[in-house]
Image (cartoon, rainbow, N blue to C red; front, side, top):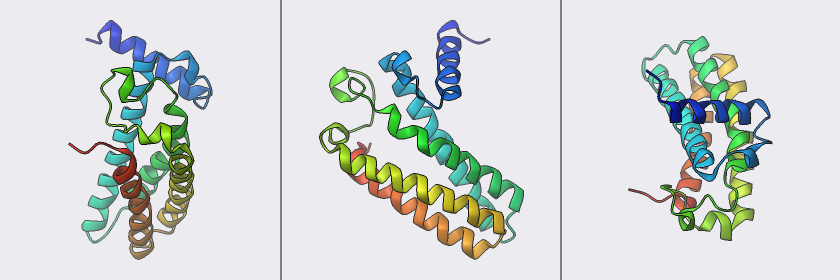
Length: 155
């Protein structure tokens, strides 16, 4: 059974996504943090699925392409999901470091690179060429890792 709180969060997230997250201001700080976390989880699962396909030795082009498209769809939304009041000082549970808000230019630059590499990843996935997919996955993962090192609290 869906809990009312979960339903409200899901509806708010769908509403925000339908507007390209342009309406993130309509979300509460907790909903914003939850949505960005869910999006990062989505991207992580997609990367894991693609990695599994590559390890199989004969990646399924459809699976790889579908997951690459998930990453490319979510990546442009993420930068908008870090408004003031959603960081560690808010008291909300988040792995985001204060540096996101104190070094916003670097964070936004990394998010722009994430979007660029994610789009290149879709193009590589569309070829079905395992070497091209693996190379672009490494490039995309490099941007992810750089952002994690600078802006994410490690457990």
